Length: 283
Length: 50
Image (cartoon, rainbow over all chains, first blue to last red; front, side, top):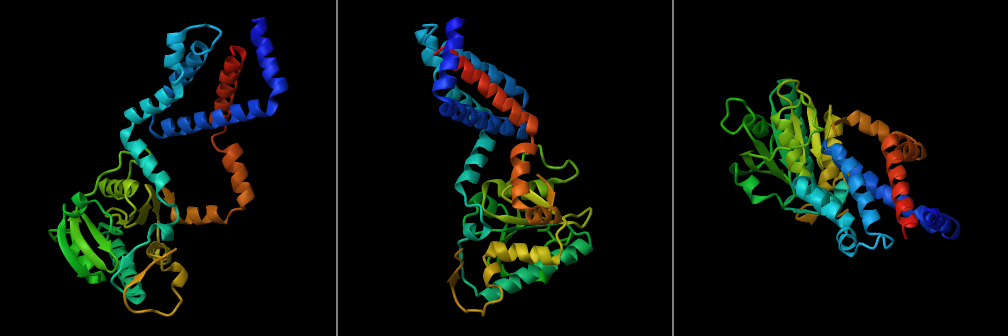
């Protein structure tokens, strides 16, 4: 016991900065783990992780002289990370995707379209007009704005259209008596690629219980794909936008236009003269 | 997760220093405090048994 206290005193007096950095960085890792577990409604696991780490620190110390346990528990934090990834595979995949994809919308949307800025601006205006009209009439809608890489199984789950966007066409698709209204419309550039597509639902527990399947699908597809979804609620007529697994609600015409222009990479050049022909949107 | 677009705009308009202070010290205070406490305890164990 005396040696134990002596060792701690030695560390504090001889290496105060290293000790403080050690504690703070490890606390940061523990806090990140806590946030992850809290998001997945598994905070109760946190105390077991803390106990496991304490046991691993004790048995892997040289003082006790337990070579087998010491070796096994020496990799405790890696075991914890693998355990968490095995328990929450979807969340781990989503987390890695979030880390690897750029945060900025314009950077994320580094895509080339076969249309001019003017045509893109017209498409945005049509999407906004259709969304507002459907919101007024309480018609539900789900529009996915996609770059090139949307998973094939999503694209092929619907009906291929490849038509130029117009507000009338969007409203017709989402007309409750139309056969394609039950599903998502995939939009790329100024064209509707497909309609009636099925999207993966989010399993997140943070989504408001009041929100239905349409909102869950809209969030779900943005969790693992670089897409932006526009949702018009059938019950309330509220327009929402989901991106990177986050849902923002109560959009009006101006906010929706701004968000779409930003996503298409037009925001900074909205007032600039229009160029015709194929172009790339660089950040 | 759910947020209103207006709230988002308001948050963006807030003073960045204030936002940083809130994010570091105020938000989820007890979780951060517990993490530091556990970390310090584990460090003491590791240092003491070295």
